[in-house]
Length: 618
Image 1 (cartoon, helix red, strand yellow):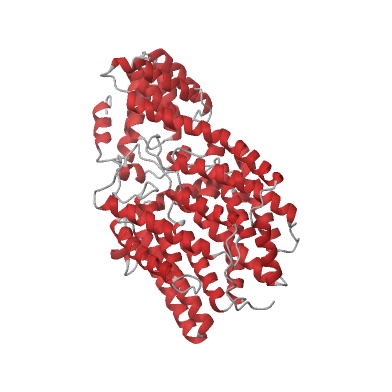
Image 2: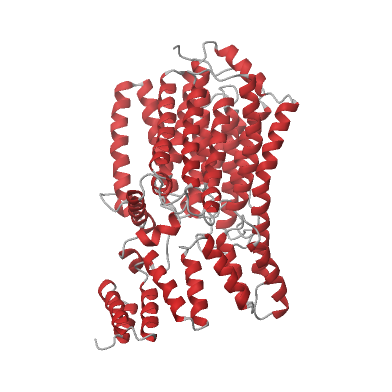
């Protein structure tokens, strides 16, 4: 296999590639303020529609240029197909199918999201070449600038949106300082390395310098260390590889220093070693609880996991007793804050292993690509891999946020796409054929295919959007002090319950609002409907227990509080309420047992004091 030494001639980027990278940027940037979830749901909808169009392009491209069995195209298609198939099987075995397909509340990390992300990766692997890869860098620079400028607007208190935000003000367009810090860091890595790419003009290199300064400022002000660590790990990789391929002995020294530095940084994040005072944050330490709970879920459900994106439904059952004592009895987590642990714990062994195989394949292809390129192309390759590794580094402690993840999957596909070019026997023929194949010649076959999949994707997309609007309107209408709004609240609640794609958390919130507006009997029916859909949801069970207690049905209230105690064994306030219910039906021995359990496991707390006061004949 020969090395590639030229950076390729400047040609017009195919419109399909422009569509790909602009769509990825739009998913990250776009949000709406007139829906219940301004960030995640609208990004998910854009992701669905984008991948729908790309599927048509992919199928058409496979028809025009069939895959060769021993090519990288074939390998990545097989790997991603196995990953998607195993994930689909896990989704079909998930107890709540809607969560399995769409994802949990405000996460949208179900089957459809990962399927769409694999489409982005496949299309990038099929279309990105050395002739058009600069488009990825340019789009990353502009996106970084937009995110950073909006971050500064937020930091300075001039945001045009009045967010109800419990976090640091620097949430940019992704809704959370950690996500904002992560995406800015990933794009900063891409932009920084763009300074060394010959094909970028002085104009773009000026933009890069501005975007780096703006992004670093925003990352520091976000008070989220993960952004700085992403940049740190990405720079270490870039410097290590570049120095190794140019000056072997010096490179080896830098690699050793980089490994030691990386270990010290990771130890510092875990409150160990000399860098602990600088890098440790309690928000990182709490991830240990999430990870250990995820490991327990996986150990008890090795092959299927607890259900795709069902981590939140099981977290309180598997969390350690010290977690609620430290952070609160009602505080939980809907994600393991580590993508690999999340997939193993929720989707099982095959999905987890297949995901690792995909990551391993991209890394293997990338390192081999570094070896087989020289000059400007090598710098492009190292830059992409460093940005991809920067993205992967933040997934160790973070949630798979759509606005961030689309870039990781795009980079992975781009690395494989560039490797395809190197593997081609004739570089010029390969690129000419590929660019011709992807210049948009609007043939009816491709248009009809793409439109078919866009229409298909628009079915769940439109219903999700409708639910977001209904929930937004309901929140603006639900006020018991304005009884004239009663019919409006009932109208939106009914619409949400009739919408199969409406988030279940919206439904229970809507039911609660309707209860306050006087619809007591209807709420009982709605809560029963929710419990049929998900019998172990703690919010639904608490609502049913409350309704049972309010009507004096002690037996039913006990049944539901027993279920809460089973699924949330360290919720001591619930245990005390259950003890009170036992006492009401003269089960004194049972109630005393519960009170003593609270005193044993939660000594020197307010709930222990309450339990001690309730003890009969202590």
